[in-house]
Length: 266
Ligand SMILES: NC(=O)c1ccc[n+]([C@@H]2O[C@H](COP(=O)([O-])OP(=O)(O)OC[C@H]3O[C@@H](n4cnc5c(N)ncnc54)[C@H](OP(=O)(O)O)[C@@H]3O)[C@@H](O)[C@H]2O)c1
Image (cartoon, rainbow, N blue to C red; front, side, top):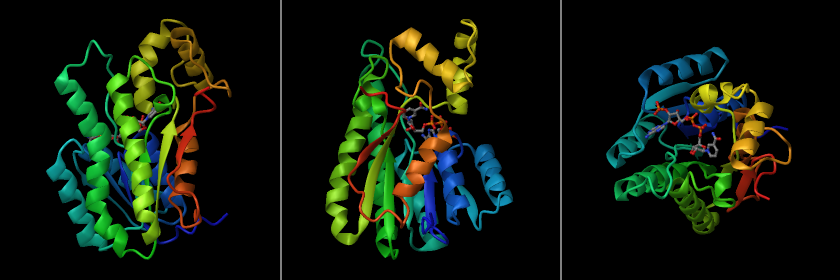
């Protein structure tokens, strides 16, 4: 299936690691020109180098902190200078975990700043560029936990639910302009940062944090949650869904909050 992304311009926030990186790679493999945004310069350079090596027709990285409004504005000003218009915005940056007892007001503010306002600010900054493009798509990242909440991620989940709500609302207001806006909600996905954080904990139980079946076994044992498919997901499985939603091929899906969770919310 030709997604119609050849030559498209695309920004992927959080595009140096995990699902953002996988989305950047998926869009590049479909012929898109890709700008990745994240804080760390070394990871940006390595990602751009890798994208170019794999044949991406244009790739560059912009260092930006999505916890900081001015940094977001400046990052999209750079996109404006380079491309003038933008076809695709995928916003993956999100907040951290925390229980109700562990979070003070500052923790809640931080969750909403990184989990919701970063998406609001990214779309606000990108919108003039999206409007200048011949066609445009936006995808935000929520989380499956907005449908099946988890006590360990209370503010995270609330911020993700707000992002999903903002996404649906924007889909309605931007549809008359032909801009389609969707929200992807991953379940448990085995990203490098996930594996790194859980490797020692899972190793103590004889499980491999890099193995999707072991990860879901551990989630099931520890939190009594599982997925119908019986394993955790892979970044590229979320990326292929995202690539379709932001493609020109997608002409009718908008305002959707779509799980990529192996059947985890029921
Ligand atoms: N992994 C899961 O199981 C899972 C499940 C449900 C939802 N999600 C959501 O899916 C999204 C992607 O998750 P992931 O696990 O793939 O992430 P990840 O592997 O941890 O990668 C995070 C990316 O975002 C960048 N980033 C983090 N904070 C940033 C900031 N303040 N400003 C700019 N860039 C920032 C990181 O680079 P720098 O650190 O260099 O900035 C990196 O490129 C997140 O919104 C997450 O909440 C993940």
